[in-house]
Length: 316
Image (tube, rainbow, N blue to C red; front, side):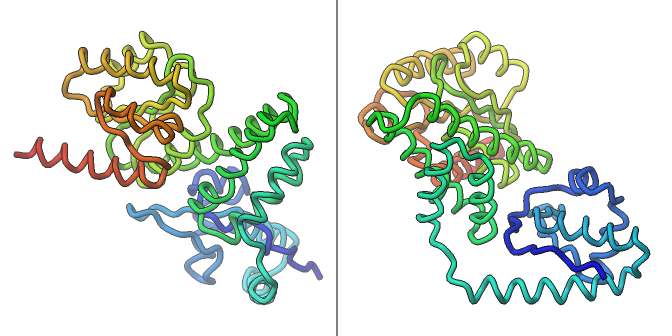
């Protein structure tokens, strides 16, 4: 008799919509929704708009149930076996001493700097299974990437290792962004880096926080030339544009970009952020628009306030 695999180390972060689950499992949505109604598995969470979001663990559960029914097992029997196994695994996970997220971040640095993608993936899955999604970003991935950068500056790792780590995390975050952006229900926000700014990990964090709150994010990424940005703003007509810089040189570029946006789109809300403004807050005095905060969580709160203020004004 087939036994359920170990589900404890699959991520429980709700990031996949119904269409993505059907694609990943080859199970029609009507089928796994029926399992949910009748048996309580899978166990998706819902967005503020009521849309289902599934985790990696939900996908593993659906695949296991699919395989058992294809082997001829009655679905109710398969669910009974599954439920028993899940209960045992949750109990084991709770009774084991969970590693702190700081330790996971340290191990993630170690894995990435020796090019161990498999271990890095396992560590991220563990983090998402144990901690809230946004905490993993801010207390796990973000400090890990800062440490990778510091090791490169201290010549403890070479540029190849730094690039590997950065590209691994960028792919992971971009994949998550693609999943969440299908649930946009609010206004459009254009997000981009200064024209020669290469570092966009922080911008990806911010974009993930925004899309998880229902904003429609048009993510342009690093090195966006000013003429191309202006053309995009004419085409997309966003309610807000958020720009990022991490160095003094790219902050000066951002000042030029901000003035150009202000001249052509005087009613467009403009916000900015990035490490250089955190370290040198005096730069904010020269910038048009609003400083959005020192991290992604603060940024989303500031954006919410800024957009609500604009909506109130437009309604008066």
